[in-house]
Amino acid sequence: MTQSSTTKAPQGLRVGASETKAQLANANPALNADILLSLYDAALSSSREDCKLTVAQAASAGIAQMTLADHYIPAVAKVLGDHWCSDVLGFASVTIGVARLQALLRELGPEWSADSTAPANAPGVLLITPRNAAHTLGAAVIAGQLRRNGYSVRMAFDADRQSVASLMDRIAFDAIFISAARSESLDKLRRLIEFVRTLTFHRLPIAIGGSVLETSADVAALTGADIMTSNIDEAITFCGLKEQPSQNTART
Image (cartoon, rainbow, N blue to C red; front, side, top):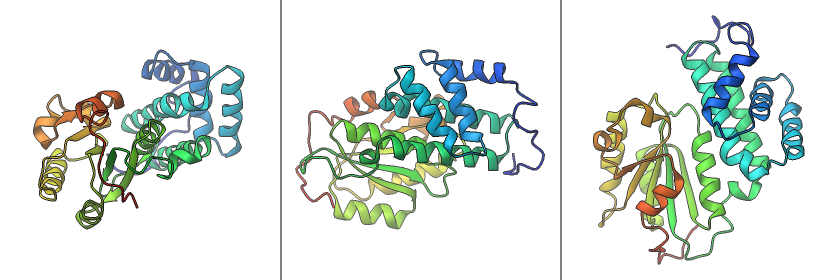
């Protein structure tokens, strides 16, 4: 599929609101489908204010901002990605929509976007998105979840080997999390993980997640990661972050 929006039909012509609402509900059946549809429409709207209106609508429905960040935004982003893959939306529309969602994520919790609240001895996670990744929204959601739970997170977005090596040379991490999209090459991810392993004297646990997990049942084996999961609690437990806080205090 080429990254072009010139042949895409306008929103609502090829997929109606009722079908989109059903797809959003399927993305996470536990969520309010009306709010999901409102957020989807706001992400694609010509007005940036529509996202704020959806936040107010969600608040009136008793939905906390944290719930919007952790569940509603990822669900809408997933359907946007599905609509690109199925040629319902063009790459430009999806890119703008995801950027709107990422901006909203920062507005919902500005303190989740910076690594300034974790204690000096908090367990440290290096969160990587591969070089030339199309979107980093999923990683931003994960970073916010980790920080709210007291972990120190450094993010290597659009990471190349030099930037990863520089971070790992300066900071003693307790685990590596990699967030990758379904479009990522498993061989490219395997080479990235092999490189990361050369940077430490002891074996750091490496977790891989994101929509890349939809491409194969053996993503962990094919990339060399220790665990494949998009469940943050499962990744935390597997990597032993609750039991083994870092002794490094230089989280600069």
